[in-house]
Length: 252
Length: 273
Image (cartoon, rainbow over the protein chains, first blue to last red):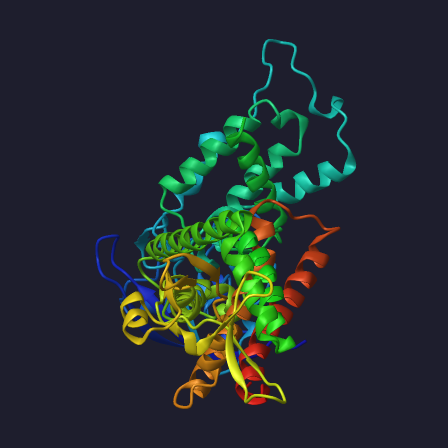
């Protein structure tokens, strides 16, 4: 397929720093290849801004192949843009029409404060993970190979699906309540399903949920938006499993 | 939210079965049921549990909505929420508020009248015979006892002044004027109150329409709420999810629809007795 070029209008959230008040700025970008990724389009915008002696737009990115969870962006009212099961770096400009206006905003959550422009501080996720997202391993020289412990295929698969979470925060961004339940549900589930995770199972779910609440995330009302917008297709089943683990731990 | 929500779903089923008896168009049958519902100790205990559930559900829902609004102090300029969630699921707080307002007005119209209003009418029957013209009697809870309406005064003073044989005490008791002894208890005529409410010449149609709208709102609330309650309790399993969802959708359509049938039936189809 021959490469096409489109002209687009961008409305981008610009904010100097965490303390400043931001606003939407409008930019016109011509000759955007439909083969370029969304982030490459932003690179092109920044080149244009630098040539015009203007401040380039700050945005998060790293691996650019959909596995690091670094890119974010609320594009045209949806986390990671209009397509499903992809991150922003996997979103291509062929998704957009010539002359289209594209809104680009940062993740919005009390727990994800804006650092600059489209970059938000997602360290709240790290602190939730640190609160309980680990397992105890015997390191006295008798370490047992993980593969030596038999695990049934069904549980191993569910655990792996939960572990596919890249911690990008799309669940929080798209949830009307700014809730992190899908993230925490996935992190709790990936351990709860495996024998290695049983040792801390009781304390883990209590600690991670406590930390989640302390960070200022909202509460889950089961709208299901997170599951639709998650680039890794993490299922709501994980939230239900976390609720079960939480109930179990609360009553024992 | 989930536990009280599911309990209130059970309440809806019970309340609906009770209300559907209106379709028999038999006042005495309905009033007997109303008496049972307000005097049976087990039902009384259950009703207090229901009041508490409604209060807790409303309070917890308000708190939840408040906290969730606070979790996103700066909103999106452009938000395409309909792409990933249903409108009913995103507006449970608003739907719930409408339902709460409905419950309060609904209880003022019927529950409060039944429990506290001194103007609560007692059930009468008209007896016709070939020998005499029709005469009205009060029905009583004592079998075989009928009290002629023209022999009953509103209170003791009136009874003594007008030399009537009975007066009414504590809203339902028929007392012998001379001896101050209770003869029998009457039946509160809740059927009459209900019919009069929805057949009110001035506001009956408005009440009927508002009732139907409230049931529509209840339907949307249940459409999300029923299945959501199971998920909150951790009851999510690929084997049962489809069944829970399907049952919830059916429940959210059938229950509010049958509730809405009643005022429409009373206003448009019930012949005044």
